[in-house]
Amino acid sequence: LARGIQHTAVRQAHRKHEPNFHDKYGNLVLLGGAAVFTSVWGYVVTQLGMEWGLSPVGKITPREWRE
Amino acid sequence: MLASRAFSLVGRRSICTSLCLRAHGHAGVVKAEDYTLPAYVDRRDVPLPEVAFVRDLSAQQKALKEKEKASWTALSIDEKVELYRMKFNETYAEMNKATNEWKTVLGGVLFFLGLTGIILIWQKHFMYGPIPHTFSEEWLSAQTKRMLDMRVNPVEGISSQWDFDKNEWKK
Image 1 (cartoon, chains in turn red, cyan):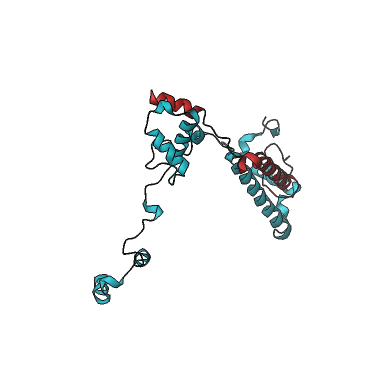
Image 2 (cartoon, helix red, strand yellow):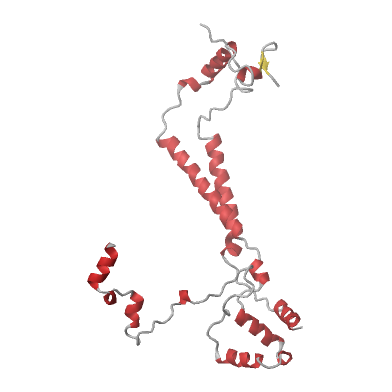
């Protein structure tokens, strides 16, 4: 019986918890980080002029090499 | 052996820890440090921690503890909640509650991976030389034809992807 009373009391005991850093800024950090990531790597992969050494299969048309 | 020799030379009494040094001003009994006492902890697998959450009770709380010694039916709901909060910090529900921490973690990880990309940009701009001429379109096409003529890697590699009858890449 005592435990039952305790349970009832506890259910009504929830304090309002102060929003922490993750509650306040979590969405902002997540979207901001994703934006930085996609923009930087999008640029690196397409615009920077890196030689990625991709496979010629399906891309390169073979041409005569014998002189 | 060396340590015991040092001990007998210096004399056991004069080697003192900082705790002992402080005790010498207080009739030789050391006050127990907080870290040596049983601690309160909010853990799912420790339903009854070794001590109550609130260690030093106010006068009001002490009166409530006295009232607790009598019949519990005399306690109001708020008094029961107060007694609970004196004994425990978080309820199980509060302990188990999910957080938004993953957003900060994932966002932070992505951000720093983005910084890594910026390092690559710097490298390309300031460090790498020109791309070798063997990567030009003309060279690659001649190189590829030569590899196919030689039947390089015919089983699973590049020559297996070329249709030699139709003269095109296999679909």
